[in-house]
Amino acid sequence: MISLQSKTKRQVEARFLTGVGSMKCVVELDTLLNTLSPKLQDGEFVFCAVPGSISAYGHLEPLAAIREPEGVTLILPIVDAVRENFRFDHTFRQITLTVHSSLQAVGLTAAVSGKLAAKGIPANVVAGFYHDHIFVPSEKAREAVDVLRELSRSGK
Image 1 (cartoon, rainbow, N blue to C red):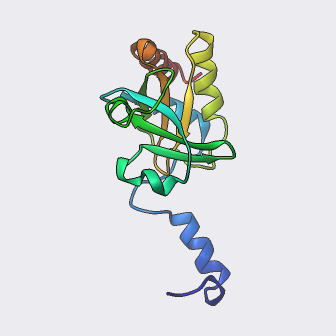
Image 2 (tube, helix red, strand yellow):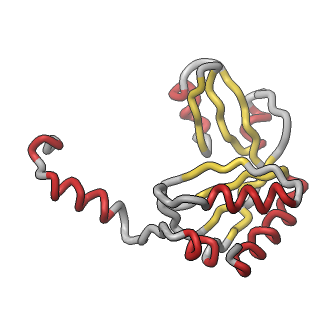
């Protein structure tokens, strides 16, 4: 393994600029909004607070796991949470914005959550390397997709 100290600054910068894989990241907000392409994923998900470390729950293959001072939050398919007897308050559907948004893009989360908030739809946004994912209450999922499609059509 080559350490960062043995690489030149130019090599390190080139690696960061090219990213991973062949997908090109989109940074410009107007382009992001015009190409959101929201996709409602199958299944329902829940947010569960559990004690211990993230590694203790790896066998569940959570969609996401976040370590917080109070404990670990897992995003799991509802069937897994029920099987494990985990408590949860609400069920959510996952909407993936299929545009490859850059983690350096500014304003996407605000634009998306603002439009959903204007319609009374809570939005829990999780950023992945390739896409942003919005978890909305299950009963508002179809409406949320419609709102996001309209946002994409209008670009504002």
